[in-house]
Picture: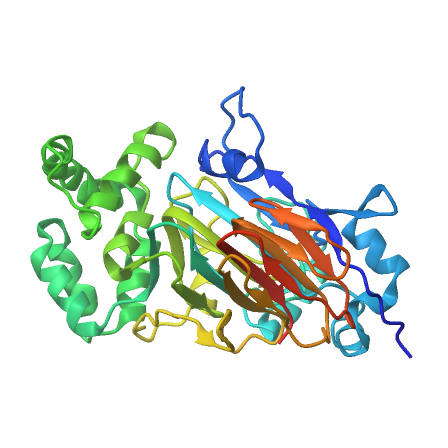
Length: 404
């Protein structure tokens, strides 16, 4: 029998200072000075070994993974058994100042097979050319906190045909799309010799540069993001990154605050700009397709991508009550919920079946049971079996990570 714990625990996330991160949003959210002008890219709230959250228990701050080992009941019996005693999700806030690499993630079966194969080949876990860091899948859901731009899945065949016709530098690529095969087209540009990549993309940069400098390229056009790639993602020796082709081949999506999108296995994507909350399965398995100096394994990428056209589905959140909305996805590992409270409004979810992490993005709330207050930028951990209620002490916006 799992013991019910009536408390909720203050939680402090771990900051990741990746070069692409912004300088202001996360320091302001957390109330910390960024005197050294460091990039604050991601806030991690979870039990991941590369950045575990610290949780206050009896006046001491301890890493969340240690507390979950000490208090087995905090995960709840079902989650404990289903996910081998581990927290199945990682909750993040991302501030994307410069575009991230083009990437996709494997299914769980692909991850298990690939991890086993690379282990048997004796490839060290920290080897830069290793593709499978663990045996887990890595679906992701995000909700925008600001206007957010991303690439998501391949365009339709008609849109790709139009693109190859209208972008002057892509005329020669029509040959690879003669049978309207997205796979053939993408394979051709990913396997293309670097000299040919340079030969196609250099004239594009020269054509777009005057328009960019005159401010005539809107973010709603792939040309704007191609120029961002030319400015920030040139390869060593002045070579062009073939990820630029994907900027034109993938759907360019704008997600507004409160809206979300789900990235399932095999869907190529890249975050371009903006701030979001992201919830993902606990995995480091990434196949990269460009806009990066990291390892790009083209055969592995081609083996694991979904080459069907994707129509991006913007998630508005399904209303669970007058205070809570859920971004529903097929992932069994996580569910992201949005909570909005007016001043004085009460929020009481059902008794928790599994662990929850709640982050306050705006306002201030008070826990009804013990009077604890949580303001903008503060988070708390809720063990399985907890009954709790929150009162809005001001107009408040919160996001909650949980297991569906």
